Amino acid sequence: MKTDILLGLQWGDEGKGKVVDVLAPQYEIVARFQGGPNAGHTLEIQGKKHVLHTIPSGIFHNKIMNVIGNGVVIDPISFVEEVKGIEALGIDICKRLILSKRAHLILPTHRLLDASSEALKGKEKIGSTLKGIGPAYMDKTGRNGLRVGDMLEKDFAARYASLSGKHQQMLALAKYEYDRKAFEESEKKWMECVNFIRTMMIMDTEYFLNDALKAGKKILAEGAQGSLLDIDFGSYPFVTSSSTTCAGACIGLGIAPRNIGEVEGVFKAYCTRVGSGPFPTELLDDIGEKIAQIGREFGSTTGRKRRCGWLDLPALKRAIMLNGVTRLDMMKIDVLNEFEEVKVCTHYMVDGKQTDQLPYNLSTEIKPVYKSFKGWGKLPDISSYDKMPAELKEYIQYIEKAVEVPIKLLSVGPDRSQTLIR
Ligand code: GDP
Ligand code: IMO
Ligand code: MG
Image 1 (cartoon, rainbow, N blue to C red):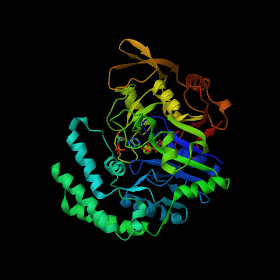
Image 2 (cartoon, protein in one colour):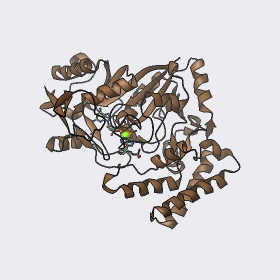
Image 3 (spheres, rainbow, N blue to C red):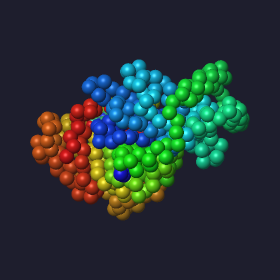
Image 4 (cartoon, rainbow, N blue to C red):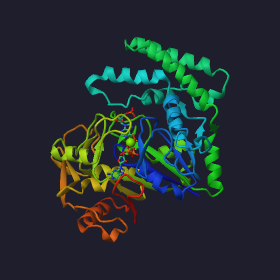
């Protein structure tokens, strides 16, 4: 059996959590492969909203095992809070959730280092979620990090103290001031949460996942963030610190490329971005504001307002190319219902030349070239694609032709039920 991958093709928040929840019944295992509590994946089930940060979005299905892969970074405090929140709903989460021994840990000092780094950057700051993601991945690649499996070793406390001490020296060098008392309390809480995690299922998940594939089980790999935030291919340095593209699923789970099946790319019918960095089709006018209001474009993790703009086809095509996307999911179509005109960026003008490739430096002056579509108005019931308004079909067909990948799922509202699968 193969592993299918589901990932975001824009700047995150495309609606990945919703789609994973909708598709999960077709799988036996859902596995997160990168990112950490910077993610906020929203699921709406029978009118009730749930936001997941580190826990995979298959958690609300009772027959599905959920795996947090080695590529994820875990903050014990926010993770245990999330676990308790789900337990409070009467779900026996510890029976459905497995953690990789190789996943790295976010320390309280990683969060302080994240804040310190942003403060030093001043106006140039990345707009990080301040969850300690960058510093935790830096310790991973710098070969200093602590992993979930280390919690089970006798010298864990000493190793923690050594790494935390090193971080505190770095904070002192940067002259970063922080509340010592609050920090000491967070360290205490962190250790309590580590003790709780020790009681959970901790495994060499690469064996668990590959054994499952051999046994004919289907796995869905769930990405966090989006391709334009990828450490290599995103709008660097305004990116996150992990590989958000398809290759990240192989590294972040221990699954070989030949065991990958479908690659499902999720995108909004328009674009959003939260945090700093270039955004060629950003709308700084009333239209952008209207999309933000109707789409309730506020970050699921930080509550920050998301910047909004029209769909960017050059960026979408590049993400499809990098990921080898085989099918597409178009989200938040309903948000554009009220617009009389909907636009799509088909090309850019860079240095007076028309191109559909993203320049190396996205911050250079890029003038988007738009194609205009007539709005589709109110949507009928979503029981069949045939019933969809002709204007919407035209919009969809144009995108499919331009990107050469079929759009298989249409989402017209946040709830599980507001989904049309073609
Ligand atoms: P993720 O990070 O990719 O999982 O996406 P987020 O959960 O951060 O952001 C997507 C937001 O849009 C959430 O608030 C969802 O509930 C909501 N959403 C998802 N699909 C739709 C849709 O088709 N229509 C509308 N109006 N909202 C949607
Ligand atoms: P999901 O999985 C949207 C953005 C931050 C910031 C940059 C770096 O919900 O789609 P980081 O904290 O990772 O160092 O921040 O990346 N960012 C996201 N934007 N959705 C996300 O996740 C994001 N995770 C990080 O806003 O610009
Ligand atoms: Mg999100």
